[in-house]
Image 1 (tube, rainbow, N blue to C red):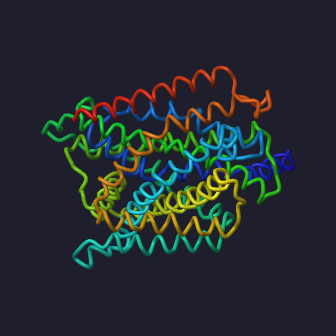
Image 2 (tube, one colour):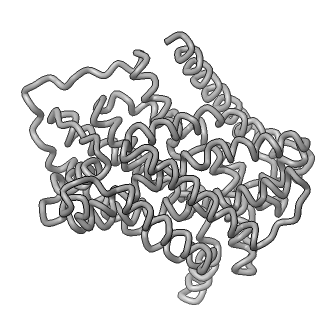
Length: 424
């Protein structure tokens, strides 16, 4: 029996990776920032939006892992089979969103690093953009020198730190919630133009952008390449589902802390980037005790650092593969490295342009991601139900129905947002 259990552990050690990378990419801005803001603004009034966004996007993320496992190609190569125009549109969408998304992730990560080290506090003025510059240089160097194995190892450690610390903070909050303030919290109306805009921004990266489904596919392939081990389709999907489930649970955890520790006490999160990060870390201190602030600050930065480096790697691989598919050009190590530098450099330019306006940049990036989601979702659904997929690997009918409902949800909300924006 011990020998059999040891064999199972060894097998799962070879399988684990893509799902953890997915969770690490999710557990960042959407959780630390947007879920907490949702709880602070509306209490549990936006719980439906968090659950609905996760439910609507689930099939399309699952399709990324499913397609790669069954066909041994990524979704991006799959898009090429839908026509050269599909590949070119995907490349254009990626170029149009990647710099803003990377900038938002980088600024939030820089804010937590700034808070952890107390750089702006000691200087007496905001230095988060400068901290973010150093951060981007470090992430770029790690990816150029360490490649996927270094990313895989770093992310597993950092993700574990965040999960443990957040679960502990939520449990302490639920067991000993602070007394509600006598003042009535300001009502939040999600049906107002401003409220609806925030809901779209909240759902844009909840749990992440639908673009991430393409990353699932090539992370799955890269894990097979680096380990020389190919798991079964069922094992691949099980590992992904664990990662997805962890990201959903933690999103609800941050929503809970924002609701109980901020909304019920009529406390607002600061606007400045470093001050905002300090406010998030303060939630942990309120729940567990002041002694925990440095530990939780390190855990929060760890979470964002794992997201930052994962997103940088994901966009670089996306651009490399999308360019090759759209232009019928060969992929190469040099092009991948060039893509890493391009994404980091372009994102840094946007960070410097926004000058620490964290909430504005985050809402812009997440909204862009939500608006392009229906098209990526539609392509994913077409691919996994096409002749490219072996019949036994195609999603079951119930999952296809789920996907159609999710596509309708994303399209409807995106359409209403565009309509409201044009009228306002």
